[in-house]
Image 1: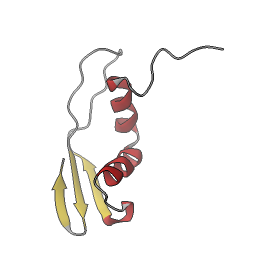
Image 2: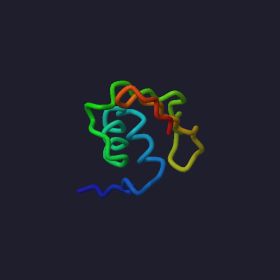
Image 3: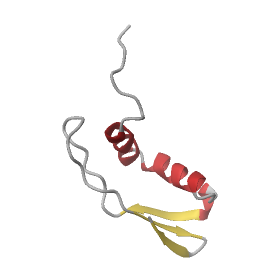
Length: 75
């Protein structure tokens, strides 16, 4: 059996996962902010993370804009 060298505690791997799965990121943000998933009517990543080609390399920041119950929320 092959052991994984990385886990979700790896910052790069964590960010790569949520950049590629925005629905998962939306659920995480909702849970962290105590907002119902259904109340987030718009969820946009305005500056999507550009994943590095290799673990340990630099990547861009992630900015999130949401509309929750008609109110704009920026993260």
